[in-house]
Length: 600
Image (cartoon, helix red, strand yellow):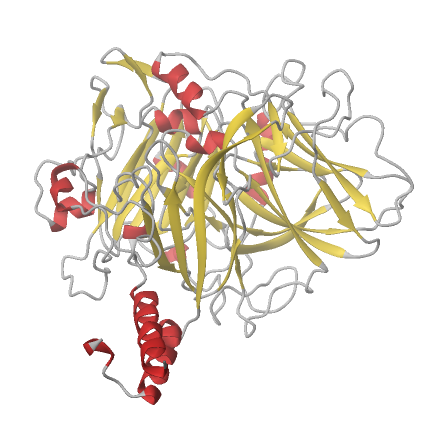
């Protein structure tokens, strides 16, 4: 072995370097995960069905990171269709190459693998990941993503005695391919078959509505202790009201930002949203307590089955939970009143550990950014309407445009000089013209300060999400937005988050500073509307790009569309996927082989 012409001491040194170079080359630690996406059969609502599992788990495993960690997640696609994983709320600085949506990344073909590599720079909070293509999230593939504070950064409350994650969401017993076929044929998805909590069906609180023998979620607690509950709506299209019988929910965080701490008896969590609560176990233990996630803003008499129920079990509990579920909010038929809850959520502004203060991910106060005094450079009014027929197919629109994903992802097309992949002509306001399908993108201004008005003229509650960014939610009301509404904006302590609800017949206004270069998805989170085309992208490019404001494409970037000929086979055949994307491991194996040869 000529390539092993090293001394034994040199070999040991090289092995040590290969094993630890990934850590020593950067000041920030790296955490790694393997995600194998495949189908398993489960029966959360009593009906056997195929779901998307990760490493055989449904829901998927927790990604547990700390501020500034480098994250490497190797995704193996063992499905029978293309796959992309997305990480909403994770603000991948200068790195939309890892974003995992179809306008920025080519899909991972069946039996291929792909390494996602990104840094959770200057972030904390509660998020979740999921597959972004073709309604796949409606069949699973989702899981929690926590970013913890660094030890040097205090949190604005006493350290909880425990930490629980609850993934709640409406659920269909038809899988995503059947739901997709319904939408393709012009049908509505209809009422869901239930609500799952952590992939499990409801506790049998009602013998008529809930069949016997369903697995249900149980949270075990000790009396007198305080726990953090991170609650995520991972569902398809239904807003949910979350409550724990007999207990207050102290809101402390939404999608990476600490909030002014307020107590709620119940809290609305809309599709795609995440919130954290502190819950103190201050009740007696005569029985267990219900944990409830129930469909919101619907006809409850018809939607009774769309209810998720888990159990809060005190260690000294004397019996099971019985009787009716805790009462629904009194404003169930009064959306005017319901809007008061999101309007009341405020951002904590200072470092002091008080109810009106908090730390962000960085040493400086999270609220020190005086967004209210910055001049707006661009305004976009994005209007949603009920789905309509375009070219013989049911489609959803923004400003009359139903988005068509490009064959070649936008930034990849830029760097490889592919013409005609997309258009930079997304209108800044609704136009009086025929609805049509197009790949129309917002030509956003780098370092601009953008105002986006989300005008919901659809008949349903909607959630909107912006990849790569958080935004300040400065206004929310009923009717048609006008410039006069700016006088009612919150310009001081508006909450910052990445997903916001927009009430039917109302509007929501957000402000964002566009300092993160790349191509970023702006979409509705309701999966049916998203699938039907209610999205666009913001293309944010530094005109003086010098290699410092945007990362180059990764070495394992996938090619498709006009660039498909550049792609090499990356299928995970036997013996190949072990070293794919990990040159350090290959180098380690090579050195180990040399060591065996020399020392023998």
